[in-house]
Length: 492
Image (cartoon, rainbow, N blue to C red; front, top):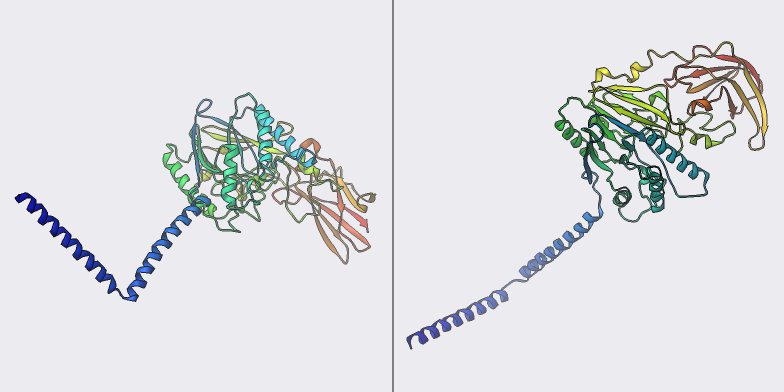
C-alpha cells in the first residue's frame, strides 16, 4: 500500500513540474521583442545560406582544376642494366584524322616514320613534349594511338612519357576547359600531364604548364620547385641530372624562345646546374646549334615531327622559290639521348632517313656549371665565320615569268661554306640615292642531300629604276657575318 502511494506522489510531482515548464516557455516567447524575433530570423537565414554556399563550393571544387596542386604520376622503373638509358625525344606531332588533306597525311607519315626510327635505334624510353594532336577530338587521339600501336605492335613497348601542349587543350569545350582537357588526355594516354617518373634512378619531372608566364600568371611553379627539392634530397649523388619535360620553352634560352616563353620557373631553375629542361612548341629546326642553351642550367628545344617554323622578318619563309610551303614538312628531326654515369650523349637524328647528324652535344655528369660547353659567350669563340669559295663567285640576276607569280626577279649564286651550315644571307642593294638591305633564310633546315648547291632567292621588294651595286654576305646561326662577300652590278 505504501509503495503505491509513493509511486502516485512521484507521478504528481513530475506532472506539476511539466506543467510549470510549459507555462514558463509560453510566457517567455510572449515577452520576446520584435527586434529579437528579427535577430532569430536572421540567424536562421544565415545558417541556411552557409549550408547552401557549402554545397555550391563543393560543386565548384568538383569542376575546378587546381594547377598548383595537380594530379601527379609517380612511377619507378628499373630497365635494361639498371644504370644506363637510351631515350628517344620528339615533339609536336599534330596528328588529325583527316584522310584527304595532304598536310594531314604528311603529319601521320612523318610521325609513323619517327617512331619507326626510334624503334630501329632500340630506345628504351620515348618522351614527347606536347601537341600530340592537332585539336582535341576523340578521333584525333584514336588516330595517334593507332599509329603508335602499328609501330609498336606486338613488340616490347618503351616507357612513354607525355605532356600536354596547346593543341591538346580543349578550347571549344563548355565548362572548365583546363579540367576537361587534362581528363581527356588521361583518358586516352593513361597518364597525367604532371609527374615525377624515376627510371634507373634518373628523375623525369613532367611539368604540364600551358600558359606563357609573360602573358598570364600561373601557379604551377610551386609544384615544380617542390619536386626538384624532393628529388635532390632523395639522390645519393651530388648534381645528378634532373630532367624536366614541358611543352613551352623558357624565355630567352634556346632557339625559338626569343619572344615567348616561361619566366617564373627560370628563377627557380637558375638555382640548379643539374637541371636539363626539355621543351617543344616552337617548331624551330633542331639542326640549329642554338637548340641547346646553357647558362645556370641546360635547355634543349625539340623540333616538330610535322612542320617547321623559322624566325620572322625574312624576305622568304620556309618555302621554295615558288612559295611552296610543303618544304617545311620535309625534314623532321628528333634526339636520341644516351645517358650513363659519366656523360649524356645527345645525338640529333634525321627521322625520315634514320641518319645521325654529324655533330653531337655532350653534357658531362655529374653536372657542374664549370663544365658547360654551350654557353652563349663561349660556344662561337672557336668557330670560324662563313666564307664564299673564291673560285665560284658568280651571281646570276634575272627576271622570269611564272603563271602563279607573274613577272619576278631572282638572284642565284653558289652557297657559302661553314662548319655547320649557312643560316641566312644578307643582300645589300646600293647606289648614290638608296641603300636597301634584305635578309633571306637559307635552306639549312633540309636534309643535307636536299640542300641546293646553287640557291635561288626571289626579290619581292619594289625598287626604283636604276643601277645598283649588290653585295651578298653569308650569316651563320651565331649571327657571324662571312669573311668575304659576292658582288655584282644589277639593273632594275
